[in-house]
Length: 97
Image (cartoon, rainbow, N blue to C red; front, side, top):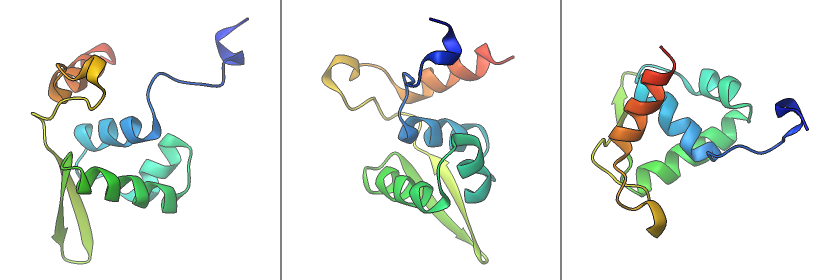
């Protein structure tokens, strides 16, 4: 089986959105939706989930929103609850360089 045949990923859409917000706080919902491959409506729901859970803060600037991650939060599942998201973001962004 080739890698292209695999339909699942290790990170959820929530993780993908968080990583995109972590690397570009000026990114707009339309661009997030395009990069993640889901609808803008789904992205808005994920952003609401992340905001409600305290993983991001939403800041209104004029007619736009800017999203800032809360870097010292840890992953939610007990198996990974010792992993700070800021370290995971650093790992992923460094790997892309």
